[in-house]
Image (cartoon, rainbow, N blue to C red; front, side, top):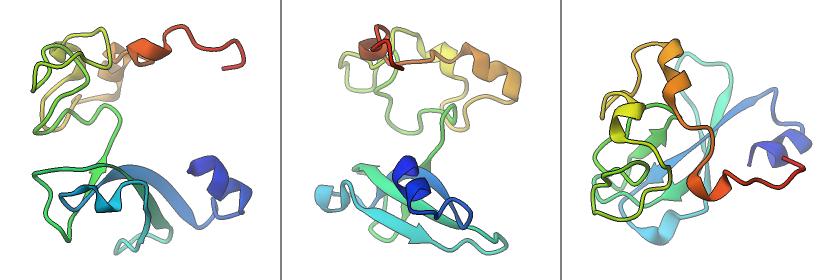
Length: 123
């Protein structure tokens, strides 16, 4: 999303993010332009998740290192007992709601999901 918008020359007018909009799969992959009071740039957010705890008119913005929220699929033990994306423990991620309390603690986060640890040489 970010590289496509930068190529279109929109990076000076927008900032980018991902999250959940609504509580079903009908918005998956869609992008939403959001005006935020007090900010000169507009937000451009892509829906990459369906959230059972998100209301239909609500966009739940996701932040790296911002905590798991209600559902954890990143670290062991996961909410539903599934295989986690990362080989780290829940304690590596800070508070469930809010994540780390300062920037230095973000160094505890794993850099890549388990499936990306052996990345291609070009990355």
